[in-house]
Length: 386
Image (tube, rainbow, N blue to C red; front, side, top):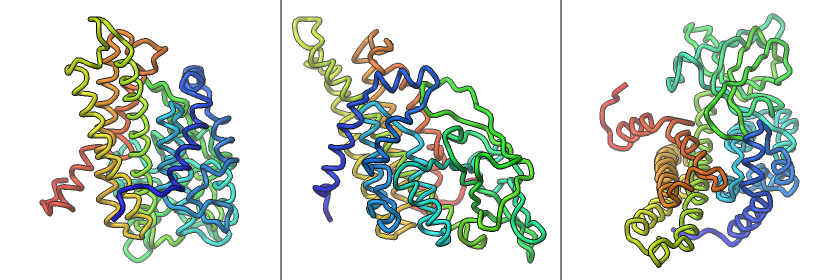
């Protein structure tokens, strides 16, 4: 077992970090506060191949694994230039299509994922279902002569206004049992009957959230990704990378906050010595560093398990990684703000806005409570509580 990353990934991290810092947090904050997007950085990262590192080589990607894509995500966040759509488009959507899509779907979409020219959102959450994916009501029915008609609602869907299409989790009716079963559909954002509205959020982010309305959206037969009978497996094949990427996102934010705090603690002097010399500040920052390294190891383990084909093992590790990374991000930001005192809430230091932003990691893509339910049931063998 190797606990160090390869030279190739280390070089990738270095290059991505340099690119992110060349734009910097001030650039990101200006765009986010004005309602803009990180299209300039996204496009450059795509041209350099960073967004497509996990896309198969035959479709123009790097042919690497989710671990390398997660490293890219982490470095952009650590540089103060997070791109939430990375968690969705190249991680969930490209992975699902690469693993389960038809040859035509792979040829149509994967080269664009590899270059960053394609952006695809992912829609699973519904207003009345919450974390219970078994209660999804977005339904697809077959059209006479072929194709599908999709109807339903989705909520808290990221980046729809930037996306070319949305990978929608719907349900089809089993002709034998009458029960609804999950199925995945690629829905172009300009399809008739597809509408989306921005949800006002108390977050400073360049990625917006949307509610979707699908009113009898007509889709061709090839909008269905993979087999309608294997959608549960296909769905979780996308959700494991989502959790790994979510963990990496939180890790990057935690690093950004910790670096800010340590830098400030070294140069800020009030009682004749840098405030970082006082254990009241030094020890909490050291604790954050320990939690950060532990969460990073679990995230790398989850990625390694997923890339090896161990979906169940990856599911357990990815949930644990997502939990640990979200917690350390909150601790890092809280302690960074405390280290800065009043300056921690001043816009120029880039920390105050993260107080709300880091809470997202506890809520999405799966709540910390559902992670604990998973670990209690699947890791500890305790009775199911819900």
